[in-house]
Image (cartoon, rainbow, N blue to C red; front, side, top):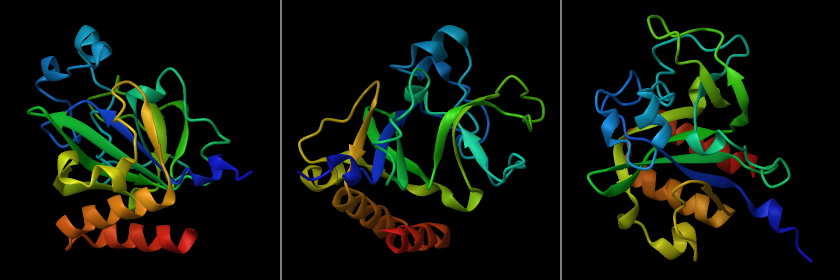
Length: 198
């Protein structure tokens, strides 16, 4: 019997919207929709998920962000042993869009040591990657524009958790992202390294 867990090359997971590109806190936390913690506490720890080119990484060389769905539990180590890519989606104006990527990530609840200047309380993190392996897309990809069968198979996008993706699905989504972000050299390198690592 094939080991189905080895097929998990990617994850697609949701974060709350940030009109400031996840480089500083949003001014519209009331639009956090399904993210009750954000609305109730008036803080979003995803605020600096893509600030990796502005601030210094941690001592291990990684930039850390937060995925709300990983707050209560992190992806299973067995199911993620071949995982290479996390596609991050966010909902804005009733549309789900792929907004960025963490490639070759590590998971685990941590506290940010290198605090963000003037934002010291934004220290809860649970996903990390090298800054060279993190990219926020200039052109977001609406999920409705993708071939749903190629991108997700028979899955529905999780609202509270995440979806695992197999090798074919990751490849299709990367191709779709690159077709709309052709000048992004970092994205090209991430895709090259992903293909090389398989």
